[in-house]
Image (cartoon, rainbow, N blue to C red; front, side):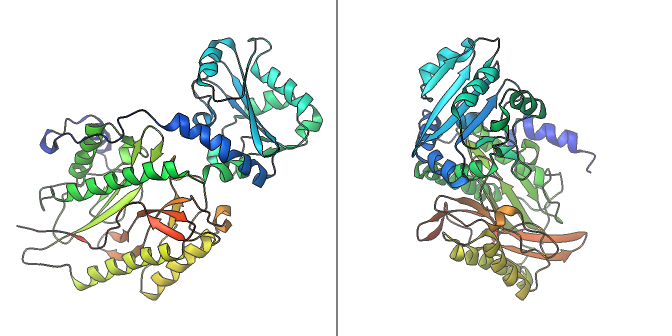
Length: 439
């Protein structure tokens, strides 16, 4: 671990970045947040089918302050103070929702109008008891709760919450409790067209800023950390957030592979292949994840060495091959296998990372895993899932080789959405290595 990391983290978060300030750009996300309307549409149009596909009749989400369920924003209990319970019931082909809430939050919930019914309960016996009483009397099918071994987004119910709630339920109900993981998978893995439009705009900005920062690189002067500071400044200018842990966003690496790690004060030198892995969060809800690569020319060079150019082309072409096979009905494992075979044919070292992952509400979102064909690694259960229209992925084209001090990996990461006829990029993909001249 780099002993300078605490200083680096502080610089990333608080540096004035005066040397890299750019004119303030227009903020395309400055208008009203569209999430409330989109959330309501998702509940009305996507949740009924998700319940049906998962074989679930009702779904209860327990909400609370300070350590809320990861799905609180999606079900409308993000502002819970005292414990509350959101209950979705499948009634025919529609969903009926009730939120059991103490009076402190009831007025706001009634004004928002997201749920069909706001059941105001006393603090004694409380929302859990009232919701359990309703479930005991009215739910005859399978009840989903948020616990899961394979999907952390569907694992928001703490042990004490689970114990407290299930002790209030009749044994016949307890016998029909299932994990919500299949339901959450079916619901969150598909994004609405309005969400895709937002992600396209955010992806374009994410990519454009990476091209801009490469224009500032001065070999033997600029550090990986300088690149990160520039991008942090761009984020502040228009008021967007980090797509993942701030200390590791962006990940900038001009030397040997470091995996998911913070950028360091390593000076960028001629002959380096630079990786930027960067994502932004817009409207506090949707995130991007895109990588851009550059090569630093030696003095007198006008193009990369043949081997570097070849590595780039294999990785880029692998990325394009993946896009060609991403279509409704294919599994994530099959998608990953296409690239693995291409890499092995072209002499790449084995890469441990999956070809791709769903992206949208978080960087590693819910949906099919584009992985599983690595040697010596068992596929994640979602690698066997079929791609569907509305799935959004961040995925890589890979090439790994040995360099002094370790390995180097080109991972041409783009964002794409699955359509009825195949898949398409959310923003223009990187076609060529960005070249940085030495003086």
